[in-house]
Image (cartoon, rainbow, N blue to C red; front, side, top):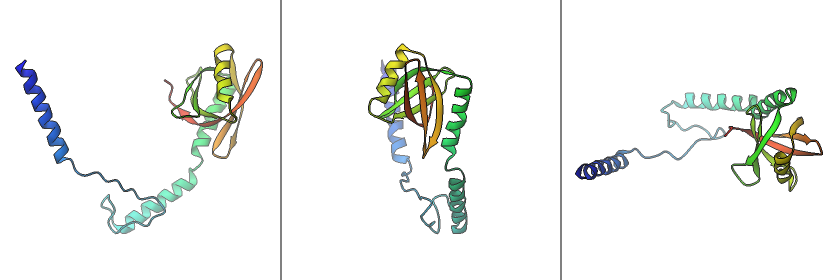
Length: 163
């Protein structure tokens, strides 16, 4: 019993030491549109920081639509192989759902109209569904999901991890 008290005392002492000796957090971040300070948080010279900011802008311009392109590529595989829809699960926030395909592809989606996700969830329990078509629309991808007696379109927000 005394070893348990000694162990908890040592643990508490270590926790207090870590809290006291921890350096303060840096909460400010510098967006690309702001000018770099003379000495940045990374210890870079002004010219180096500006060069990194310019590179960041170019990467953002060149690869701004990469999430949509990744979705289109992944969905191409799902439609070509006629992968069936396996599950509809709640999403990470209100108005989002996770749709899971048999090959492990999992997407976060939002309904285009009220009730679309509910209709899709009920259908996934009772019938076999599949992705019949997809197309880009602004920063999302529209998914057309079909089953034997119906059809619904949802907006794919992004890829998700399979549970």
